[in-house]
Amino acid sequence: MSDEPTAPTFRSDVTVELVRSAAADSDVIWAARVSTAGEQSLEALQQDPEKSKGLINFLMRDRHGTPFEHNSMTFFISAPIFVFREFHRHRSGWSYNEESGRYRELQPVFYVPAEDRKLVQEGRPGRYEFVEGTAEQHETVTEAMEASYREAYNRYQEMLAAGVAREVARAVLPVGLFSSMYATCNARSLMHFLSLRTRRENSAVPSFPQREIEMVAEQMEEQWAQLMPLTHAAFEKHGRVAP
Image (cartoon, rainbow, N blue to C red):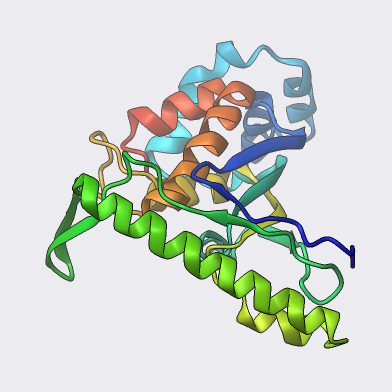
């Protein structure tokens, strides 16, 4: 541990970096062709996927999902811990590795909502919406969070300085602390994630995600759409329902 404790910093953004991928629209095509062409489906490995746009749409429309699993994407995500606790509910088709508070000293980077983050919940569970907060509410949120974060991190540092193990001292830190993780998925599992963690007018099944995980989902979708544009277009066309 350093002699001079690091001063807390506050962020309202999240970051998503695509660090590795083996994903293309052609992966969907050859995986689907094997059902009717057997070994001749290997010819589709070099096929222009534009010629099979109709096949991708058919698979998406009729929910033949397995051809969308023969690809892989790994993202490096930096976000508050409470986002990851929601994220880890997605288990099928996902692999995660997150930084550990047992093995490293956690850095004092904390989440504070931006001014455009809606703060007020109206309605009852199952039938509610979020609306804009007032300037006074935003000031209250910012001051309360920053004060709480500073106090918690100071106590964390005190315990470390006293020789307390990291895995014990970390218990005082809040879920607004930033963490980082690798998340690996395929297009099918990602589409299921996006169907639940983004809110779109064209969604066949409405979803109401917390804004912070939606911020992560939006960046993941943008990067995936560049890798598999035909698959993404079919996902959009057919109501953003995972096949």
